[in-house]
Amino acid sequence: MVDLDQEKYVLGIGIRPEDIDDFQAVDLELVAGDVSIDNPTIIHGANANHTEQWRVGLTLRYIPTTTMVTTEGHESVFCCGQVDAKTGNLYAERPVFVAGEHMSFTGCDEL
Image (cartoon, rainbow, N blue to C red; front, side, top):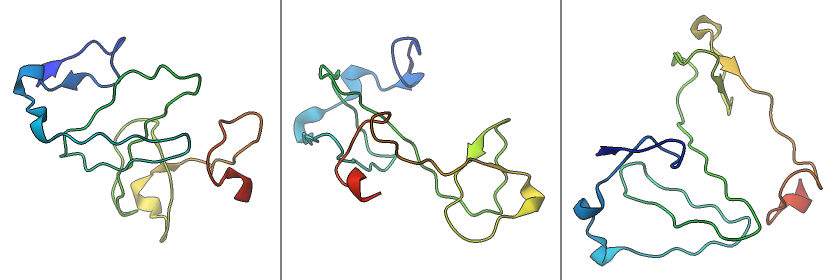
C-alpha cells in the first residue's frame, strides 16, 4: 500500500500500480441510478467521471446495535433491531428524496 494525497484521491491509501495484475479485470459499466456493491477485500476502482452527473461512493458496514461506534460525532444509520442505549451511538435521521434537489435515479418516482 502507498499513501495518497487526499486532496486528489478519495482514500488516503492505495495499491501500487505495479502490484496490480489486471489480466483478469472485468469492466462493469453502470448507468445513472445503478449501484455496485463490492466486498472490501476485492480490488476495485473507477476511472475519472467525465459526465455531467455526479458519482457517489458509499461505504456501508453492517454491525449489531450492541457495537459501540468510537468515531467522535459519527452518526450511524439504524436499519433494524433495537437501539442499545448503553453504546451511546448517534443515529442519523432517515434521508428523504426531494425531486429537483437530489439527483434522480431509477426507482426514485416510487419513493
